[in-house]
Image (tube, rainbow, N blue to C red):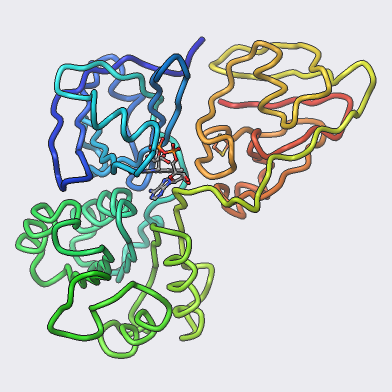
Length: 352
Ligand SMILES: Cc1cc2nc3c(=O)[nH]c(=O)nc-3n(C[C@H](O)[C@H](O)[C@H](O)COP(=O)(O)OP(=O)(O)OC[C@H]3O[C@@H](n4cnc5c(N)ncnc54)[C@H](O)[C@@H]3O)c2cc1C
Ligand code: FES
């Protein structure tokens, strides 16, 4: 059974010259399946020039809204994003997997909180959902958004952010950084890097007032902002991050021959349990399962999106780069199939 559902695009809107916002029409019978938590993403699939492409996109609308909304930024030479910008329009049908991912708001604690998010470029998408959900659901909490872009014209969701600012005048603060357009205040002219973030934390946002931090954007921005926060004494455990890009240094695991006759696998996917023998040879657990004709969920195949997350019920696997998993998920036995290799002659997994 496929995890993909064919959904019609209700609206397609150009947001900036390089980004488009898509609203998916989810039939009533699939509403519960496509309900998302703020910060989650889903996988889109398309065949482009005969090749199957899967890409993850964060949901940018508020939690509880029944019409999933995504924003796709066009990347130079990007296969999927170029295709999407050329072909997707209202009424088109696109295949989508239900939302997944553990990035999102820390559970409410009943007390007022100060959430601070740092986003750059298309990293605004999950942050927007988190921001809007927090302000709606926590009437005494406040939110600070620090958003880096090239210039004003490239700011995604500019109007929506202005509307939110008007609605939550006293509880929402927004700081824009432009790397390619001078601003009146020198601090805000330039990339959102460690030095500028450090200055911001000294002059505008007191670290002692922050309860939770959310980061999404290019790797260099996330690293710089994390370093600035840690240098000010902010606890690493209260920083949550979402990565969009793969780390070129991280490779799928090499294959290991645990037994000449292969691995005896029992796997639960989509409510059905299958038992089969996996041949050695494929580089990752995910590839072995695909080669055996199974259809486990996946998207990036690079340890970033978390779509191939599964739980090891019995047996042993070795995992590299669990970027897309939190420490508590790893402690509970979850692994990323695309970044794991089997280390035992029998293995039992659950994707559900
Ligand atoms: C959890 C998750 C959520 C995501 N959410 C969004 C989202 O809301 N909106 C969105 O536009 N993208 C999002 N992405 C990125 C998206 O999945 C694709 O990677 C992106 O659209 C590029 O795909 P492509 O086929 O056009 O480019 P490809 O042909 O796959 O790659 C072209 C090159 O662009 C690089 N690249 C990939 N993403 C970016 C980027 N964002 N900025 C600059 N270079 C990039 C790649 O490393 C590669 O070198 C998300 C990714 C993940 C893992
Ligand atoms: S498919 Fe993206 S983490 Fe495995």
